[in-house]
Image (cartoon, rainbow over all chains, first blue to last red; front, side):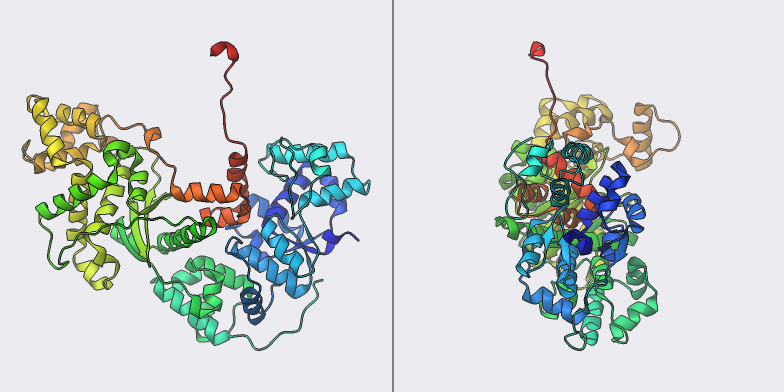
Length: 179
Length: 393
């Protein structure tokens, strides 16, 4: 089973997943029927209403830790101020429930990895699907371009190609190629 | 399903409840207000505060969002942030609108965080007027305070269209906010050492934005006690404070000596008041009404009955029937000329481009959904440009 099947997804990754599924419905076979996420990720503060409505059926709400543990985790982990409150909650939930994390945030990814948990982002999932010969690199290149056209720069560049994704790593360093 | 770890001990129900109440009271929010913002019943909030039931972590995120504080403020009382104090350029009912006070509090927190993350604190301390703070200020005192600040503000060089840069140069953090309702043009707030002015992002009649910025500056300079005294004092003297801040704004934007000089040099007394004000507007780039007040204050022209003056404007503009104030601005400034880039947005953008913060933090700081932040940041990664054919060069 792939690491992302039992992972908790942050808001950013849910939004990217939504776009990918809109572009190519058949991608859903490579993800669990319902991915784990926090209830708050689907709130209007976090996500456009239309995105939340589409994703609701694809999400299984993951319970966050009890308050005492949440307080302990947040105070002892030294999470930076540069992390959003919701991402801090994703971190605490992942640690509490020993879950892998799919996140678009480097800082969250590093904090999770420090706890010995699996972590990655949507780009690594696509890369993995090509390497395991489940998807063609040309299709993934199209998907990446489709995301970029919708202002989702998954690799941080406006014109991503398979070559960019092939060499892409996360969270330690980003692809040095430019679009 | 997620694997559960063993619970480490009893939840600090009473402590969390106390902190929720403390934060709610600091924001002058009723239980009903908070309940409606969180989307729960009043009983639920009352039970949280009494320690009868405990919110779960998701509830806590919603509560912190509704109160404008960080989750940590509801978990660790010791680090709870100091509640901000406000002065509003708004109709009275809006002054206690939790939507506005909470948004302001979130921006204060975001501004403080982005300065820490980028290690770029705003230097420069605003010099306040050294009055006794008890009685009303004289016109002379207000003019003198405005003149003194004008000289050090650089407004003469930047022009009022860059009023944000003027305020920031004086040590006042400034940003724009969206507000659909009527009656709120701007507000100033102080939290600890942090001074923040929030201006409504107007799509037209930016003259009012410029005036609001100067008005808020007036409150900060003339009425520092407004941000520390108890609320009863503020209620009593609201009109006086507003009048004084208006007078300050008029003097700051349209200094007496310059106005008198131009009026005399260009012999504007030979024109109708309407046309004289139109010409002055080309010099000072402020609202027609601001100029009218300045011209009549300085007795360059006799004061006209308000209704008659409005009718004269309507007549000149060819307006028949009722009109909104925004329609009564002759020769309005092009809304595009207002500099809307703030130091706050620059710092957030810079932090994102340096990979110091991610998209979800941008969303939290700008108070927008993560999808929207994705759109904003993609424009930062690929700035707009205009392709010009070589032949056109």
